[in-house]
Length: 508
Image 1 (cartoon, helix red, strand yellow):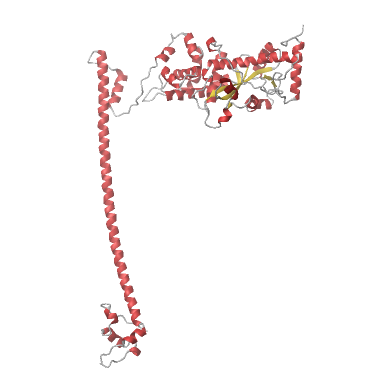
Image 2: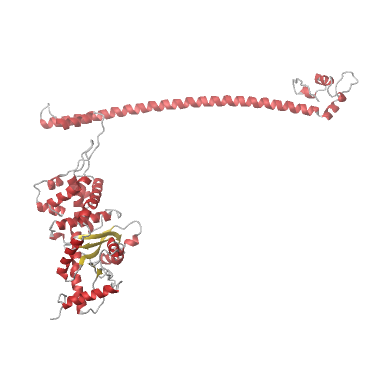
């Protein structure tokens, strides 16, 4: 069926039975529902129209059309409001940016004016001071002074450095400074000190900058050695050498690292075959025992209680001896007849016994590979008897041969003890707890060992006042043997000493 379109003016037209709309329906639209009224006006019966349902359909169509118009009007108004909001936001952002730019320009101008005033003031003071000192208005300031004034009046930045006195170091570094006083301060002669500086110069030397001159190599090395020799805190090093405390801390670590890198390969190495034969002969001359290649000893260096794993560094023996809680790290070393370190193992916690420290050392690995064949290393009762490690008898009721053997072993062992005593005597930083961090302490101790060897090689005499009484850290373990042939070899050595009258006790 076809439904023609109509024009509606108001909602009352939808339902009024007197509206011309019904007359339009009379022109062929649903003729079966049209009836003639008795009055002859010719309109539909309202009851019939409602029954037909066409009124509801048309009303729905009209309401839907109105809703569409309202929605379109709402969309138009929303777009207008959005455009207005975006326009206002852009204007506010632009205004804020303009204000910030003007503010930055103002601040820059103020800073420029302040800098200019300070620079001119510094330059004026400098010129006035020089003129006053010379007593003449026309003063030749020289190139360096003129350069300083130019820097002060220009826009270049200058680094402020605190003026510290270097009189003490300048006095020590002077060529007329007495040799004995220098040796007392740095534990070595001027010639040995100069040798160390020449060796380290390529590594520790720094370049000058436009802001300041670099610290000279001799001053760097001297500050490090004096710190190690005296064990004084960094503030004292700062006062002596005219350097900042943080600078002193940094250069001490740098020089220690350079000593381990440059000097350790030259002055602290395991001997070659030729040198080992010489060492054997020297030890045999004092003990009568052949094939001794070194004397082994382990000492402890006190430390501040660590933040982690405290129990591992607790030293029970030092705590009992000092009557206060003590913590330490171990230093294991093998020395030759002259007391020169040939091998060191540094840094294991103080609670570890000597035999466990030995097992973790490079010396033990070297022996396990067979590199110590036909070589005896002499240790104390804290070590086990092995086929390369010779230790004294640890049980009671010794025979004459065993007693004589122990005396000779003790003489060899004293070589290592005396070397460690001189090590700690020369470098007092090893005698007490230091400010050095635990992870950096092995590097510092290694540098002390290298410097000790340099002093021993150059026959540097040690001041009697620096003698250090070494506390024996050895723990008696009974030295259980791990090799049956080692027991037999030790018994044969003891028998030969007694037979040839070389033991400490002999029959007459």
